[in-house]
Image 1: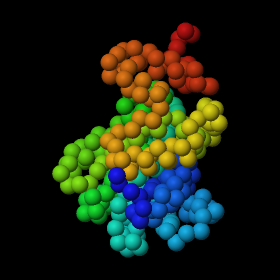
Image 2: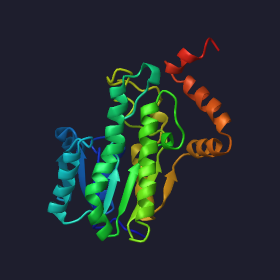
Image 3: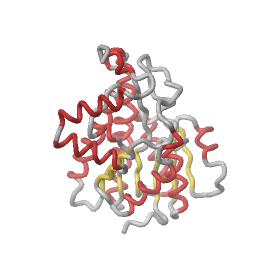
Image 4: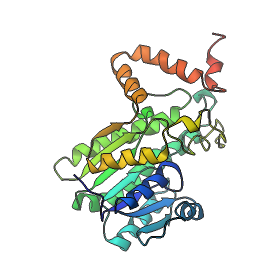
Length: 275
């Protein structure tokens, strides 16, 4: 069992949602946490109800290599090491690829994929030395491409491929690499998801109050870290989607299209030809 007590846990994208809940839960389990976000005031406000000397706040845009390097260097300067890196920062989208400006795809890759690569690159020597854990917060979109989310799916497929290759490289070092796929979780990610022209969507097509809470999700993620799991798919719907996609890919195409066509104001209506 890999206990989080007295471990140095680094979390990206921690100003809201799953990232914020991860920070709070890790503190409750006895860890010291280093958290980053693009907006420092919002990040500090997220933890304003907690009085602790075990939090390091850092302003960083994970799409920028220099910011990621500075963040990891600040953690090591503060506490001497990194034990767990949770690559949580991410952004989504909802628009048909045909209508999407390419800069939107690039932004998603820069944050979701390159942010993971940058932070992992600079944290790896310390994590390897301390036989720690590198984790990516992925999505079912990393197993199965989702319509109207081409950039998001591409970024999560890339993340998972990177982490799987790295896990194999580190197989005999004692360091562990893993990823988790939460499924739909109540968070701000859909409100700030990019539309076709790159502006924030500003609303969610889902009933957020019926989704898994960020706190429950964070608990499951940290349980997986402590048990050094390989991959965790959290929901039954997610597990079924991955299973059907492996065994019956043509059927999966139809089912996934039908599912996302039912969303309010679904972009897929454009391709239904009146069906």
